[in-house]
Amino acid sequence: MKKLLLVFLFIGPLVFSQQKGMQEKSFFSEKLYMHLSDYNRKADLAYRFNDYEKGKELFENFIGDHLEGSYMDDFKFRSLKNKEVNLYDYTKPVFLITYASWCIPSKGEIPAINKLASEYKGKIDFVILFWDKKDKVKELSKKFSSDISVVYVDESKNQGAYVVKQLKHSLGLPTCFLLNENKQIMDIRRSVFPAFQTEDEKAYRENYIALEASISKNLIKEYDEVYAENFQVE
Image 1 (tube, helix red, strand yellow):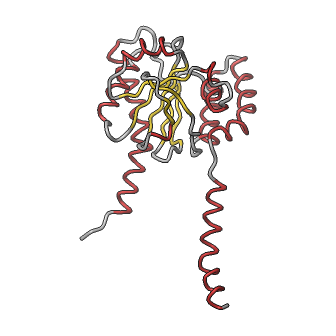
Image 2 (image 1 turned 180 degrees about the vertical axis):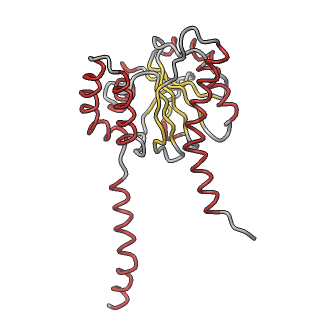
């Protein structure tokens, strides 16, 4: 009896701690369901009065307070080879960028993405997700390097997928999601849109700096902390 009591005292807190950790793990779709309507109400009011700074502030607070730190749902999409793919099939960190054929990337954005995908090849999976039909996506995919996975969701065939609808309709397009290897959301940001008259090289630099900052601020810092914890001086 004493042995059983000792086992319970040793294992019990560990089990309860694990259960608590599982209960506290929240997903992107859950956070949207809980907080999106309130954000939309406040943001609509700000933009109605042309208060763009307030709108930007509301977006950043919504992302920072509710979405960052949650886990992206494991939704399905298709490759251009017509293969069904799950987000969690990617075992590395993922830089997920959402587009549509009618949503034109900003000037300099695609070259910046191609450059980063080359620099972080083997360390981060760059995934471009189009909300469109395969024939349109296939043509657009030619602009992206072979280091990038170009996939698509034909929403007309995914009407029951809540997360698919919310990814497209909740935050606008294009939107960038940086996920760690566990698919926890580390950063969400909208694309940079340089002024129309901005020179190509400057537009490229603006996009590159913004996207690279997301990686270095979040993933690189996380890697450094893990490395420091595991580093042993001989």
